[in-house]
Image (cartoon, rainbow, N blue to C red; front, side, top):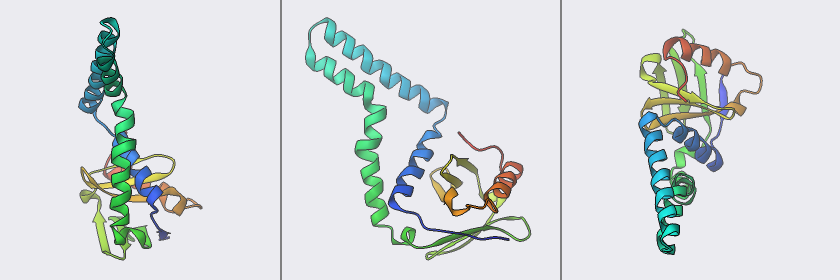
Amino acid sequence: MPVLHYTISETDYVAASRLYRQRVGTWGRVMRYALVLAGLVFAVIGLLIHTWWLAIVGVVYALAPWWVPRALHEPLLRRSYRKYPAMHGEQTMQIAEDGSGVIASSVAGHSNLTWSLITQWAQNEQYLLLFLQPRMYFIVPTRADPRNEVLPPLRQMLLDHVGPAKK
């Protein structure tokens, strides 16, 4: 079986987190829309009663789903990446010879991930994320497989054994 060799850059780390955050469920979407709606209500009330500070607070709340991740979350991710030396080294991933799962390795160790250990997966054009827990995932950049030798069969096996990718 072919082996993927890749490194995760700081940009990859942050972009993969964006993909992770896009997987918000129904409850998360409802909360996001409620926050935006509440902010808009405060902004309109502030404008109607000529209370500018209330209108500004409303706009800040309404825009929070867009500015909070970029202003707070991403700088913390960048700092986390810089303090995580194992993430900087080369990583490899391959499908197990017997098809029982995925073999991943890095400078930190070697993991034999059977399909039952992968709880879900997500993907976009740049990354494939393999989740072992709700907030713990392996990042696989799609650029690591330019000849499409590993990722298409891996996606099919994930569909067969784990289910459809989470959006």
